[in-house]
Length: 219
Image (cartoon, rainbow, N blue to C red; front, side, top):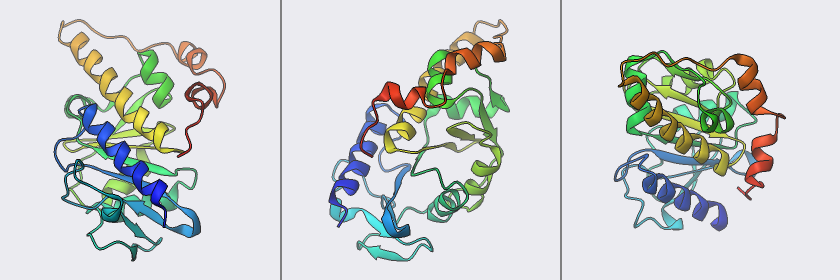
């Protein structure tokens, strides 16, 4: 079952690698299915050789319903996000270097670039450190999201999310591009001014403007 959805997870993970958001088997991709089920990538398995048989389907309590692999070690945190944010249908966890580096020196990534505003809705918060595989990753993501489509986890990586896999992937990818630009600007030694809130609002446009721009992918 869910062959299309399982392949979409693998395709998304390969795009994450192409965008240098992860290395080897790092990170994970998860997608809400019907009946309260969730498709998740397995832990510790390289994405290049992954097949749909490797994708794990769990119920809302984390019990494996399909698959023989161990689900992502961050499953408890992912389940918490899906439970507390019912509008979220996809999550992507990465260890992307530029956004993670920014999280080591800032408490928030202020809105200052159009790609950041479009794909992430403005400021991107930085949450305190939690160990890998800890439920706290999910708890802090929910607590710190504040309208953003991603949260930087200090000393760890990024949790991106959205109503579709495409939206979550673009949030992670454009966060990385924007963080790289922002850090390059900071390296000049000059202050980087955040955009005026009214300008951020103008760039955001209508509430569903980004979804319309992406022309709404299937998953």
